[in-house]
Image (cartoon, rainbow over all chains, first blue to last red; front, top):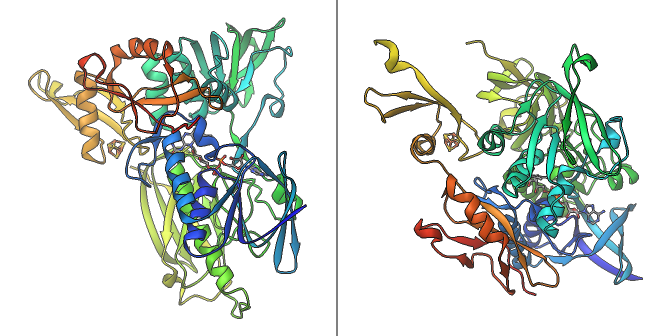
Length: 424
Length: 127
Ligand SMILES: Cc1cc2nc3c(=O)[nH]c(=O)nc-3n(C[C@H](O)[C@H](O)[C@H](O)COP(=O)(O)OP(=O)(O)OC[C@H]3O[C@@H](n4cnc5c(N)ncnc54)[C@H](O)[C@@H]3O)c2cc1C
Ligand code: SF4
């Protein structure tokens, strides 16, 4: 068995892991980035469309271009990339952590590290998680699996398709398939509003006259060996109305019904997970419940913009550097303010913050609003405020609070982050 | 007619950045002159005017390669291409094969049909 020693081990070489690892290495930590795939970049490599990096690189890039740049940065920083290697276990060993890594080539490697940054990304929900009735036939894919097949292997998944769910991956695939000559007949969405970004509705569906049916459920998939048709029905009072069921002929069904942070590893080492995000609960130091283990990117909560992923990763890296610098000092003063999402907010991260330290809150709305007010307050005092236009669950919201604004408050006081509609 | 000047003739979503602004286009007196509202930056106005006159899109695709490791190499147009030329360009890309090694940024097709739009490679592949 090989044994390696590092200051920081990053799990995952997607946008989050590459940006975090580049930063910790630049700041002098001996860093290793581990990924089970052969090429660094994560999900970006299969996202060949453009629309990445407008904030972070001030340019519209495609996924592979963004991946290329963050990979080059990581390599230039001196971080070590360990590919084709899966982390199978994280253990605490006093103040250090032990990672068990398995690779086909080198067998088992044990990594001793002072800190860990979780950047494992997320995976797609699949049909099994939804319980749709019908036949077990070929031609059913998650949108991301179809994307990988088409963009990485060059294999067309079918000729005529129906897409269940209006998440961004499904919308991007609707355009991609149309450009490849596939007839995309319909996109269905059970909610009364689309799950993906508005720009993707415009450029991926409207450009191709692909209908989007809201408040509609895919009720069955039928065929002999291959999908032959699906049934769809409108949702009335929260339930599919089977009397209005309609048949749609197609040979392929794609599911684009959301992503779940990939946290089997986190769970098995005892990290507490958030009931709404399914990612770890973190404080304003990007730290999970276990000291020295940090999290960023889609493993923490699902992002729609890679730019936010990169920024969150750098913050996590900075916090990791600070943690290692202050490892011998115990925090004496109690300086924790719990954060509570209120009003229309589904969740808000981090789950707590500290005085004297700037914090960027990331959150999602549970409702669609033309105009809304976002406020941060403590003990009935308003600390920050922002007016937002076109708020929707698909688009993540961020807001920075300066740490000094908390100086006059007693630690332990609740910070309320509230999103409320503005009447016009 | 008095109020026809203020009638919104088209609504669209700006696709130039993730802010996805909801744009409204009003005809301004003379035909072919438009007023754009709802944009949060000047880019939105340009987008709307282009959409009214000559809509264009960035095209992305993959092209087959002779690499032993990466069977498909991603490409994009360096500028938006007229929408009615997209199918033809895609047909051409489907029939091509890229010889590796290639660098991200290498030009695959220069100045497609004299549009000033080129197709560039978006992933470096060594072997
Ligand atoms: C299909 C799709 C389309 C998108 N479109 C856009 C867009 O147009 N614009 C935009 O800005 N953003 C877009 N995004 C969002 C953005 O690209 C992603 O949120 C971001 O790239 C995620 O980065 P990540 O590093 O968190 O995760 P990933 O890229 O998923 O990276 C995680 C990595 O961890 C590795 N890993 C996981 N577990 C282990 C383990 N146990 N051991 C070793 N390695 C492991 C995986 O192999 C993977 O490489 C899109 C996302 C998706 C999924
Ligand atoms: S108008 Fe400007 S800010 Fe709004 S979507 Fe277009 S480019 Fe973005």
